[in-house]
Image: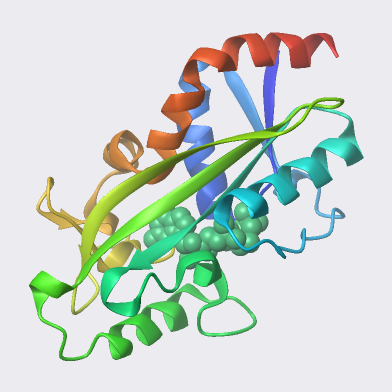
Length: 203
Ligand SMILES: O=c1[nH]c(=O)c2ncn([C@@H]3O[C@H](COP(=O)(O)OP(=O)(O)OP(=O)(O)O)[C@@H](O)[C@H]3O)c2[nH]1
Ligand SMILES: [Mg+2]
């Protein structure tokens, strides 16, 4: 059985990875399957550093290949915020609704053409005994003035995807997983993934 471990406790990310991997016959495990595993502290200053911190902590603990995902929303009118602080933008404990409210209030009065933003996803691959490496993907859009749709997670209800003409949260998971920052990053792993998984199976 091919299995990939993702170092995340975020159920929204977990669902997306399952959706992307299961048609390929790959079983996804996340930290939701290891509830005793503590949340990895994200002390890095970039998405890449944090993705590596997550992947390596879990890879060392389980002695297996692990993928870490650090992602977030970068809004041009807010000089790239919330960025690496996206999950906790409105403070602890992390709360998607409060984060959206904070972003919308900071953008009050900013016209549509200046509400450009992008999602960014860094994926780190940690293999025991090897140096971790990263790939990244983005997805361009614009911040709406109010929520639309109920799919996805995080800031999806206020992230307008121009190429689709709807909010990210109005897309089906099939549609989101074709165009998202996470899907674009994963695509860059695609060629390596089979050999990495075979090696992981043998280890
Ligand atoms: O609308 C969204 N659609 C997405 O597709 C998406 N991807 C990331 N994000 C935001 O960025 C934070 C990640 O922070 P993050 O990488 O630290 O993850 P997290 O803390 O939620 O879980 P973990 O993986 O660290 O366990 C998340 O909480 C969200 O606020 C997204 N928002
Ligand atoms: Mg996190």
